[in-house]
Image (cartoon, rainbow, N blue to C red; front, side, top):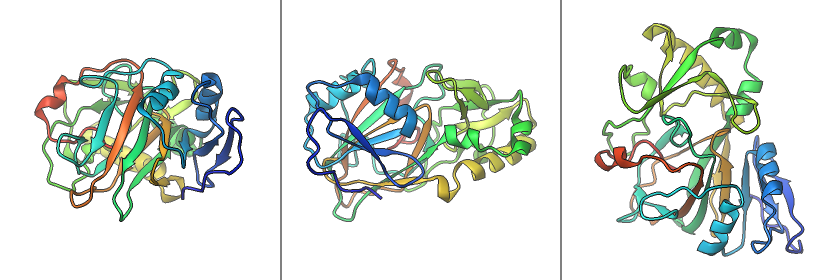
Length: 289
């Protein structure tokens, strides 16, 4: 659960308050005019996710925080997009199962940030799990089972019914699909070198070179470990929340948003620009926040 913003923390006195859940912290005292990008990066390495609460944050301030961590990725006409269920918004109202953005490409985003511009009166959630912690706590039997194996992340371009979250490995293999990318199931984090449990509900269709039935059985066990309820941090969005997280270490998902009440989050991502042309022909499915 999101905690209230600390009172009386002077700007420039950066401090972090753990959420009390399995990951994440609230950042206090951040001065948007003088951001210590290394301190923010170190905190993200430690907590995985940071939330700034209770402050109206402009586009420029949001961009300044993200750019302190690296290149602002272009998405469409610029580096700012709106994740919204309103007409013209990205990703629409659908549910999204567990994923990290663009893992079917060689260099997925490093960080993703969302700012709450408009929220439903009934509330809205984004869920997170830490795949670094999942690798660290992987039972010895499962660790031995994945030694030397690779997981294949694929872009899910299949249409879905409203409210369906999409769990790719249960739909069957996509041999020969493009785009896709193979990584070791225990993948070294590109920045920290820590092992990441590199399988995703919404993107992993197979563990190779296993037979299909063996792949499904092993993925089922890995997902049960990765997504266990005690490992999930459920972010209950509040007005003006800015949440930034390590896209390589954390996975996120969301329930069905619907269209009855507006939900709009400003999004800025950090990392290499991605080829987004594949999504021009698909229903909202491959990403969601």
